[in-house]
Image 1: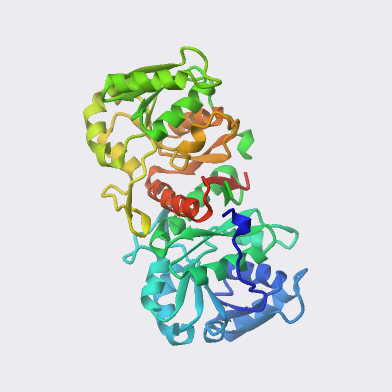
Image 2: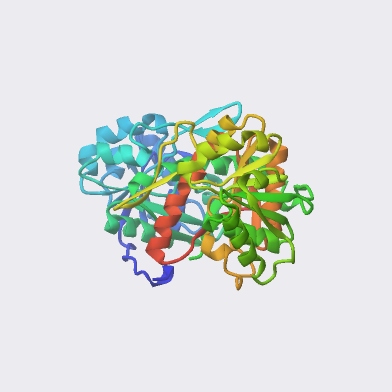
Amino acid sequence: MAFEDIALPDVSGLTVGILGGTGEQGRGLAYRLARAGQQVTIGSRVNEKATAVATDLSALPHVPPGSINAGRNEDAAEQDVVIVAVPWAGHADLLTSLATHLSGRIVVDCVNPLGFDKQGPFALRVEEGSAAQQAAALLPDSRVTAAFHHVSAVLLADPTIEEMDIDILVLGDDREAAATVQALAGRIAGMRGVFGGRLRNAGQVEALTANLIAINRRYKTHAGVRVSGL
Amino acid sequence: MAFEDIALPDVSGLTVGILGGTGEQGRGLAYRLARAGQQVTIGSRVNEKATAVATDLSALPHVPPGSINAGRNEDAAEQDVVIVAVPWAGHADLLTSLATHLSGRIVVDCVNPLGFDKQGPFALRVEEGSAAQQAAALLPDSRVTAAFHHVSAVLLADPTIEEMDIDILVLGDDREAAATVQALAGRIAGMRGVFGGRLRNAGQVEALTANLIAINRRYKTHAGVRVSGL
C-alpha cells in the first residue's frame, strides 16, 4: 500500500484542545489547525492568558472567525483530540491532574524531554522510556499517541508561510487513534501524517529534536524531517 | 550560513575501508562509494568472502575498474576513512581487536543497536549511550563519527537507481572529521551529508532506524530521511 492509498478518517469535525496552548509550540499548532478548519480550544492554567492568546491568533490571516476558543487546561482536555504541548518539567503533574478529563480522549503527546548545557541540547533519560510512554502510564483510560515533535514553532506561527515542509511521525499502539492524528496532521497544508511505529519507539523521535536543534544552529535554519520513499 | 555555502573538504582522493563489507549495508555503501569515484577496500574476517563480494560489486554498472579491493578487516581498517558496518552483536569485540589499526583514522560508525520481537523492531539500551559512543570509548586514538544509519541496503545496491533520495546525518565531536564524512556522503549522487550534532546525540539517530523499519512495514517501501529547511 502506497502512502496515498491508505485511507484515513475524516477528522474535519473533530475539536482539538491544546494543553499548554499559550506556549510557542502550542500557539503555532493552534494557528495552523484553525487555519486548516479545525475548532481549537487553547488551554492554560491561567484563563486570562488563554484568552489573550486566542484573541491574538484569531486576528491572524486565514483563521476562520470563531474557530479559536480559550479556556482552562480542563476545558482543553475535554475536546475530541487533546495535544499536550507543555514543558517536560510539568508533564507528569499536569497529566496526573487531568486524567479524569482526558479519559476516553485521543491524547497527542508532543513533548521533547531535552536538557541544555554549554555544548547544546541533549536527550534526557526518561524512566518510562519517553514522554509519550509516561503519558500512557499516567493515562490508562486515554488513547495516547505521540506526534508533532519536530515542528518549528517559528514556521508554524508565520502566516506568510502557506505550506509547511515537514512530515509528522505519528506513533501509537492504538492504530485507530494514530490514524486520526495522521489525518489531523494531514489537514495542515504541506504536512503529511506518517505512521512511525509503536509508543515504545517514541523516545528516539522525541530525542531527535536535539539533532534538529544542532542542525538549526549549524545552518541557521528551522529544520524539519521529511520521509523519503513515500 | 546556508547548507550549500559551508565549504567541505575535497575527499576524492581518500581511500575508504568497510569493516563488515560483505554484509548488506557494507556492500551497498561500497558499491555507491566506488560508483562515486572512491577507492574502496571491502573488509571481512574471511578473505575469500571479501574477494567474492569485491568481484561481484566490480561487475556492477558504473563501477570504475579496479576501484574495489578485498582484504581482511585489518586491511580495511588501515584506509583513510573506515566505515563500521558490522552487526551490533560483534561491534565491541571487533573494534577492540582493531584499535591499533584504527589509530588516527576517521571511523564512521553506522551500526544500529536494535532488537526484534513479535511487535517488530525496538531500540536496545546501550551502556555507553549509543554504538558510536561505544566506538569512541574503545578507540580513544581514532576520530570517531557516526553516519549512514538510515540508508536502505536494497536501494544502495540497486544499480538502476541513479540518485539516492536521502540525507545522511553525520555526528561527531571532531568537526573536521565530521566535515570529511559529510563530504564523502555528498559524493554519492542524491545524498547530502548534514551535520547532525555531537556523538552524545547519536543514540536517537541509531534508534530512529526502528521507526523507519516500522514505516517500511506499514507502507511497503524503503523509507529514508530528508532534512527540510536546508
